[in-house]
Length: 245
Image (cartoon, rainbow, N blue to C red; front, side, top):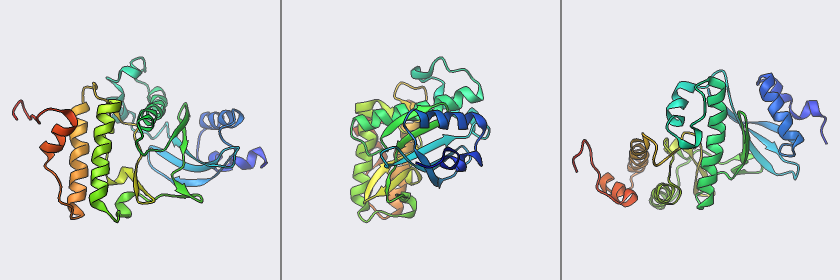
């Protein structure tokens, strides 16, 4: 077994003491053996490739407390009945966001949607299944166009429908940037902003998800269905804008 200081050296160079304590706790509880290196970096969160104690690859997503756009996060948390007691403070919001992504992944995974299987969240750290092979992450769909885009369109629209109808969940930021191409299958990621269908902005977010996917596949040369048809199939009612069909 690697020395403790070597296992998490990469974290010490990037994260604060509070995050380090969370990482050590997750290690002592048997979730993380060691960290290999970064998979992706962003303003609000970094994802690292790690190993559990069974030598299996895991994804470790760590939200940055200081640089996260907590005001933007708040609009997705406020109105979510699962997080009614969360206070409007940066640290509380970021911690709730990590837990929110875990719960959203649980809902999606339970109904068979292709998402990283969630493992645990603690404070600003989320551990989940690593989507890739031999330590190499599956590519983002935007930069690795599917060989059968027509089939992908059908699968993704069905995923949006199943998320809404079976799990009562809306991704809220679905696009070619939040889908991985793993063995020519679409895997949906970055679902932290996902809301339940009774959320105040749920329908607005659902409309955006549908439009984003249709626009993407139109660019790929796929004959796409009308937005209103997709909307009706998912919600079971006619599309209305400003009270008009």
